[in-house]
Length: 88
View (cartoon, rainbow, N blue to C red):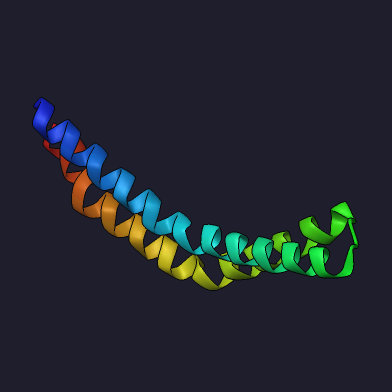
C-alpha cells in the first residue's frame, strides 16, 4: 500500500465518521439550545434538566438512524478495506 492509498482511505474514513456523527451532534445542539432558552426564560437551573432530555433525544435519533449508520459502515468496509486486506 502506498502513502496515497493510505491517505485516501483515511480521508474516506474521516468523511464517513462526520456523516455518522452529524445526526447525533445536530440533535444535541438543537436540544441544548432549546433547553438553554427554556432555562433562561424560567430561571430554572437544574443540571438534570439539560442532561436527561439530551440523552433521551440522542438515543432516539441513534435508534432511528442505526440502519443508515450500519449500511454506511458496511459499504465502506466492503468497498475499501476488505479489498486491501484480500489483495495483500
